Length: 275
Ligand SMILES: [Zn+2]
Ligand SMILES: [Zn+2]
Image 1 (spheres, rainbow, N blue to C red):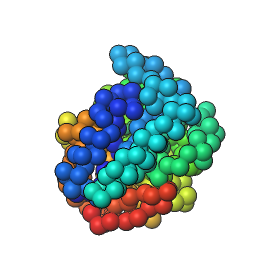
Image 2: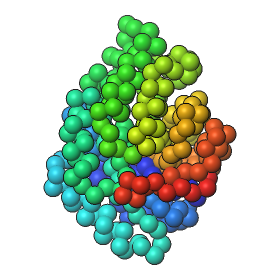
Image 3: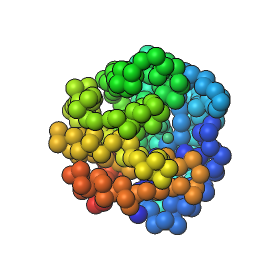
């Protein structure tokens, strides 16, 4: 099965699953690699009703990042003959954080960094205040505007996570989405990623519930048309039952968009495998 490059564990404030359980599930599914990518969102707005910190082990300081990597190193060793455990992290980007994130990326030996825009205009994408009193197109555009600033400022991540995240939460956003509506700005994001050798992710966490992949297939197709070649697959599983969910179907969609290989990152360098 396609390797899962977006996996959460108990190091994330919104998951309880031991790292080892995710690894064992990856082995059961026949994955050759699994990349653990727990949440680290500095300055995340506290958004009810969750109240999650979205910081590693609810602390997120440098010592905690070191402890996290030490845990992963130990498990890499233990499972070396069964699966390759890769060191990842999902960093939440906001325009005012880009310099700090570049420093964090440089300081720690990650294999793979997902750059995710969960928040725009300092509010969680799920926060209803984004969508009150304005048309959905304006709200969605604001999301992509922040994301463009994010990808230009934080240049050290390897792939953009679920890059149309706003379509999950904006009322009617997914139903009314067409590439043409936002093509001017999404083109800029994609060109920035391609020129700097960065990839996109095919995130399947809403595949079962909403028959949706993120980003929308038209964005993947455009990435490919513009010359992009790097795509990873991520289930974003916060429980082991959901590891690799939807990968078979999503693999077919990605191939239809024109990409025949998926990427696995080691020390920030992609290797390619047939989908
Ligand atoms: Zn995310
Ligand atoms: Zn995630």
